[in-house]
Amino acid sequence: EFRLGEAAKAYNVLIGAAIEPAYLQEKAYADTLKKDFTVITPENRMKWQFIHPQENQFTFEEGDAVVAFARENNMQVRGHALVWHIQNPTWLTNREWSKEELSKVLKEHIHTVVDHYKDDIYAWDVVNEAFEGGSYRESIWYKTLGKEYIEKALIWAREADPDVQLFLNDYGIEEPGVKADAMYNLCVELLEKNIPLDGVGFQFHMDLHQPFDMPSVYKNLKRFADLGLKIDITELDIRMLGTPTEALLALQAQYYGELMDIALDLDALVSFTMWGFTDKYSWVPGYFSGQGWALIYDENYQPKPAYATLAHNI
Ligand code: XIL
Image (cartoon, rainbow, N blue to C red; front, top):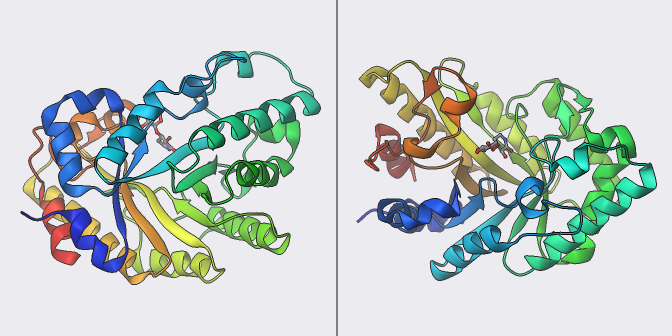
């Protein structure tokens, strides 16, 4: 029986999927994960909204369930995400904070969550989606704390766990452009200041009808790797419009395969993680109207053509 994760071990690349612990009750869901994946990301359960629902309350049960499943099945866990502009609890977003207050709240959050998952998680997305185009996103964090919130978050995460890898994660930085440049420049600045930063996560939410230019993607990822950073494909999916035809599925398969080639060519690449694995539970239809079929297994847990190209190219 072919197993993606086992096969990719020869290249030191983890094969990953975002998961929801509630679905683990479904046998086909759990079995497919066990067969093909060597790393999992909690799709939602470690986000503020779920893990820190009240100012004085942390709820770790669901995140712990993800970690327990990973442990039982010899998988790694990628932590997602310590700082983001959405999926935040209302106690956080519904009031004005002074710089000192918000700084204290963020520090406590990062210390508590990172400490709780110390030794369970190999990498954290410390700051998610800090940029909007080439500029810093006007998030609650940026508006109140200034761009220093990024370095502070990295420092606080390092204080809580000296070993975990610390990542910045974003979309729209896969190809060269203003946003990729903004991320690159930030990385250079952080490294020059000796701020703890281990890697950059590239989300890779791709539209089949507007595919990335693969040689440009390779070049762009390589320049981050050349800074001495790890790189990670963190949320790959390739969505399509309308009902999937054989031709569309073949094109999707081709792009998945090309991305695997790029991944295996980059020594600094840690994981090839998809944002789910079955079309049954993909975030795509809920967020991109009329689009879907973005993953490598169909709704019935049958491998799609994309699975075959991944397997072939590993
Ligand atoms: C998405 C989840 O998949 C959805 O279930 C949730 O409703 C919203 O968030 N970029 C990210 C992820 O970094 O956390 C997002 O996940 C998808 C886009």
